[in-house]
Length: 443
Image (cartoon, rainbow, N blue to C red; front, side):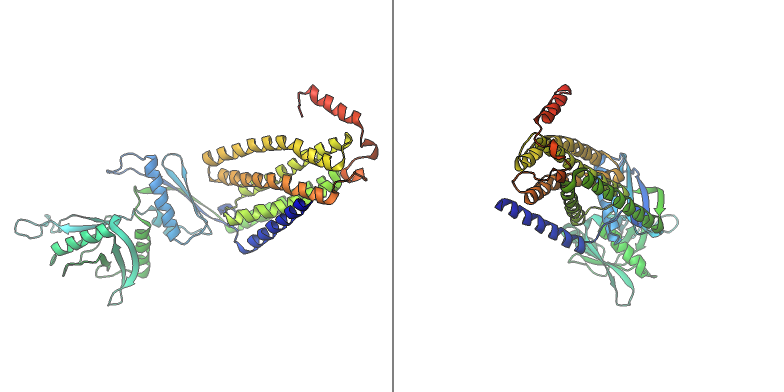
């Protein structure tokens, strides 16, 4: 009895922690619930990347995720679709003109040096344009970029190079004293300052030429440089938006459907199993609190499909209690005392509960790794729900059953939905065994 009381208080502590977590942690809602936009990107080959491989797509996905994070948009998901496409879902954003350009830009930063003749003069083409060649210094040599201003009050982009980049930049500027060094961003010349002296220490500044940068242009370049260059360019091939009104309507409909469904389940359990049904309903409430707290703590982004997985897991949690209670009733009909009947009901039902839930867990794993983002949300919530239901259906329900009914005889069979003359009828139990034997069901 002491162990059962300790377990009861452990359950109480878990419930309290769950309530605090639910209260403190925000709920992550998916695109279909809060509105937002979907953008489909398709990777393109280049001269240096002739084939889109899984490794290239992993690098592209990582770079896009970094860029989206720089936008400051939370709960965004970037998922690979097919061999060379990425689906970007951005909640709470419906105007994506700037984001589209932001996601699609390659962010290639390159430093170029003038091509000189034998006399050290800069070579120009037939139209008089100066010739440049790569200086071997690119955005890959950057450590970070920051937004700053110069002495004239113009917006600039401050650059800090990594170890290798700092060395190369020092060598390059020392060689180009008195000569221009061109800075290109995505193939477009940003500025071409004349180097006055060698620059060591791994720091530089891009001023944006004579016209300078606007604050937005400078910030955009900083974000792109910090997010890193894309391994390959990507085109936006499809986009659509979900309005916040549709998302709000979906939330209300989901709430209503969930409340009605769970209420009907709880009413059925009380009608069918009386006091054990009430216990099962209490365990169901505990289950809901623990599961919702886990969703917030992990955190899990809730979508309509995810809510469907949650509601389905509620039904499966109750299904486990039905198996347990039916086995317990069989034991009572066979004349077992209450304590033995409860323990035997749980023990005999466990194998069926475990097998049925394991098949669903395996299905969830397959759906999660092979399905689309919507299917993954369903699989994840259902998977977590099943694991929690195994705890509440067995541990919570069993503990409450023992605490309420104790170890004595069942004085009021109606509490279990039984009639008095059903108790202790061995022939009823034997008939049940014969029926099971006919269908090959073993205890």
